[in-house]
Image (tube, rainbow, N blue to C red; front, side):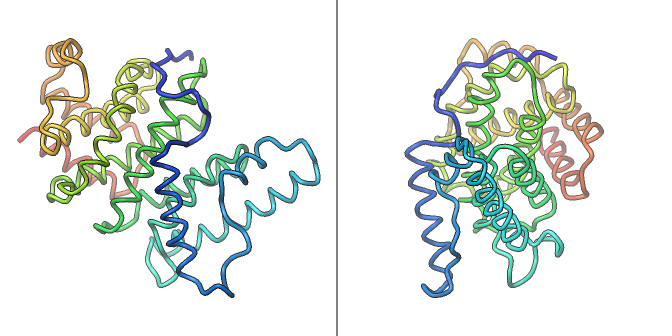
Amino acid sequence: MPVNKSPMINTYGGISSPYHEELWKLNFQHLSGERSHKSRATFSITKEFILRFNQTQNSKEKEELLELARKIIVRCKRKLGLKTLGSGKHVHLPAAWIEVIYLAQCKGEIQDEALNMLYASLDHASFDYDHLPALFFVAESVLYRLCCDASLKTYLYSVEIKLVKIGYLVFLRLFIFFLHGHLESFKQHLLRLQPHLYALSFSGASYHKYPNIFSNVQFILKASEIIGKRELHSESIFSPVENKKRHENTDSDMVGNLVWEDMKLTTCSGTVLLLGLVFRITVLS
């Protein structure tokens, strides 16, 4: 089924911006700093690695890079604690989320596995204030991909569907942190999301032929709008004309129904159901 294109923010493929470059360097330094120089892993995820993985035409190099990526997948699974519901001394969720979202730029089986791992982790991981920088990083990365890569395609593919579902879980978590007053010191992070959310608002209606994906996108936009009004003291991420149209067609009852339909249409764990219910109660109260 065709999907309309949204306004482009950037034409460069992959997750890349000055902010992403800086944050990735800081996070990678943190990851490396956790080990002694002698025990550091011999492989890492870099922009160069991703480009080589996706562009090489040499069959031997392809196999070597694939094997390397599989090793990183195994390491990330351990850091995510997928078998222990995100708990254990070996688990480091922020680091693993960042590694996995970068790994998801490697096309093919690695991309699919990385996105599946990230979705599973976000679905059951505990809540921790220290997760917020990584959550914002994942949020911006997902929105960037949706507004750039996905908008270039005529149809929604499994990657775009997975990205929307991951974005849904991330914004559910951000909204819960918002309810607890934990986003006050993250205004710059919220501001960086605004251009991506603005672009996504143009393509939201394009997902209407994919009911659960459409509701996921609408949830992301509505949650972001509520957070923005409080934390950024702005009316909305949308233009005045769009705001008027949205207010004419959207009220609190519709938002509640939207979230309820989303919960019915999406197969989720108890964590997501609970978060969605809290969102619904908060909006309707």
